[in-house]
Image (cartoon, rainbow, N blue to C red; front, side, top):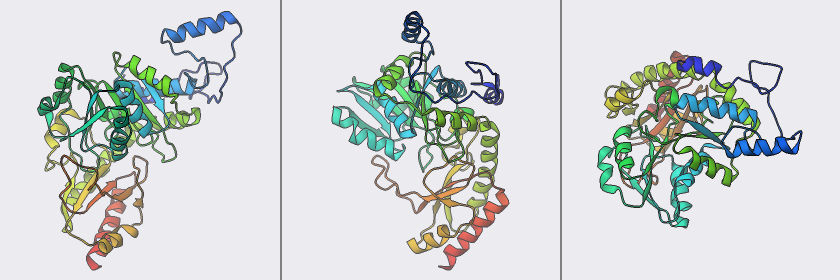
Length: 389
């Protein structure tokens, strides 16, 4: 099936009658069995990695439907659900590492994930080393005998560096390390990480999968070889998303294809307009031919999402506030990936150590599903306020 057909049909097989378009929602903690023999057989099936339900946090129908659908879209083998994107990051890393291991982590990664690695994993004698996201095959110089995982995010948070994932994966695998990738920006719809050598994909489904800014949920998708480690970690941590959140995320992902295409078209139109504004130093968006990551993006990705950043020419905090505080259509908020447009200043000075940000004021925009003419007028009015303050 093509991606759009998958999105319409995957995860729709109900366990029981009546047959419905969507899998009915099951809220339960206790699963009842008709006999001891059935209980034993179900447990044996669970031990054999079949997707059977033994307890309320294991393989409830809604969770299985969502996990299998996302695994298919991302191109992996199986997936585990988590209550948030950050929980998914933690689950993926904990699945791979043990005391004494060394982890390489991109310097342009999601800041809370970075803090988890620095503040939590380091307490258990796991060494975290950050690397230049543009290092490519040069990552070989950082590999050590105890390097267990290489964590990637492409494009990077806020600054949108496109990583050479195939080159990094080839080096990591040659040294016996696994590759984890945060694929939030493109999703599996625009980037098949597993084809490019990744072993686990972190997908904060709060964003483009759920799409309505009313769900917190994360997933980790694993290759067949990496799945036993992920399954064991999720089981040991007791981490699962609730049936209600799985239901909402599965509902949202049905329109992923049409939304991603619209986000891309709108973001490209807005980005091209932004490039020509006198207050803009540069636009950070890999789908722009002038972006440093354009060649890699063109080689590896099949599309772009609605998230981009703008580096402004020097301006004061009052000028920035005048621009941002009075937008009509751009809400001021930290998340992104929903149907709505958002803006947030990107303060990343303390979140980079290998390549500190030395540019000007950085502002991140998520281009939603509104008409681009309205969004551009809103941005234009904002620049006028900045200039007059």
